[in-house]
Image 1 (cartoon, rainbow, N blue to C red):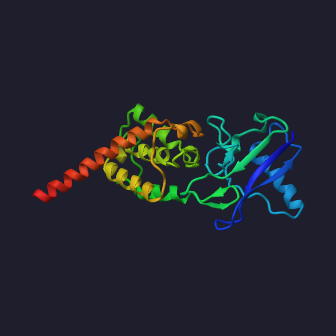
Image 2 (image 1 turned 135 degrees about the vertical axis):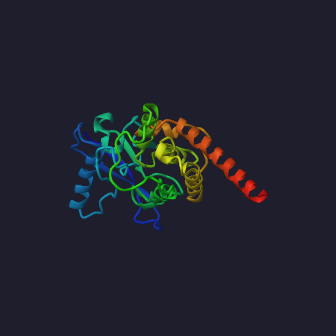
Image 3 (image 1 turned 135 degrees about the horizontal axis):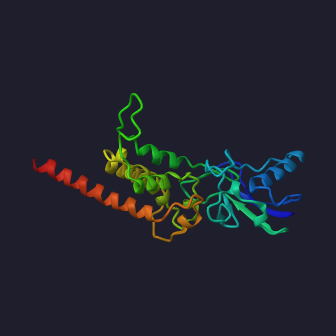
Length: 257
């Protein structure tokens, strides 16, 4: 298989970027998209040129580091699939593919297809910790968790923080990511003591990072490689409203005592 690749090349955050066209040949249908880029980079290195910089780690759809846009679609547009899981058999021989990094103010380009997603880390850090007792391992049934709650928590925990939701959203919103990280803890018994303060802190951190607001386009859920449901945003908004009401009530109570 042979492909024409239009790849965004940018040496640093400050440097201007542009699309550069490459030809790659000898690609087998069973290669992953990243393996195809490996072939290209080997050819570039053999010619003494700089290889295309892209982020990767597990190459098993677990770490979430490999994401970028392929023909304008996050992770290539196949549902429930990351770039590293995307096989070249899903493309036509001779096709032209355009590769570019996530486009969001909160995700500045580091180099080529790599963006700085540390804003996600700061949102998670704003959530703090749970007040679970430490010491010897507790019995497995010490804290009973109903199956429906456990299933919801596992579904939320599946988020790998790849950033596809932000890249696909016309507002560059991080609502789906933040909601998944909140729901993961907010539905569990262990997460109840800090539930509402955690919600306030993480939403405030998300807004401080410069992400846009949600206007219910639904593109985030459509491109999520782990298929995080849109309903989690509704759960987060419900907890946020409750948290704001509780904070206002506590302030009123303290002022009237």
